[in-house]
Structures are given as C-alpha cells and as structure tokens.
Image (cartoon, rainbow, N blue to C red):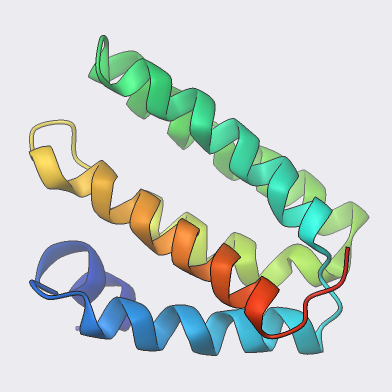
Length: 123
C-alpha cells in the first residue's frame, strides 16, 4: 500500500499524513519550489472546496481537471513536478461517495503548504 493510499484511506489519526507532508515539503524546498507556486495550485483547490458542499460531482470533475493543469505547470516550472505527482496520486483517492476523502486530500495539501513554509520555502 502506497503512503498516499494509506493517508487517503486508512490513516485514522493523521500520523502518516504529518510525516509524509513534512518529507514532501522538505523535498519541495530543496527543489526550489516557491510558496507562490504552491499557492497558485492551492487557490484552485479552494475553489473545488467551495463547490464540494453543493455539487460533489462537479467538484470531483474540477479536481480531476487539476491534473492537466499540474502537468502544464510542471512543463513550465520543473520544481512543481514532485508536488504534481503527490497531488495527482491523492486526487485518484478522492471519492464523492466517501465523506472524508476530500477532507483528507485538503488536509494533506494544507500540511504540505504549512511545512513548506516552516522548512524555509521561499516566496
């Protein structure tokens, strides 16, 4: 079972999420990913979150459409690649029929963002 699958489906207390988010953030800092680059992606996820409460099917589709946007960003900014891989895999585990799946995705992304800043990620 991959770490992301565990985080998205079986990590009841969030311990695996916290460890994985810190490791991911450290990698992103080493690769030179900036906070503004992460924030650009996070802004789109917040838009999905706003939709999630009213129309899960549309929100899930919009979340899936984040994958090509991440691929485009990766092509433009190589340091986005690791984040794109992590988020892309996590998106695969978001199920509109499971109440906690999007929340877990959001918690993972928020933790990566927080640790990126804590680890000294630049603006």
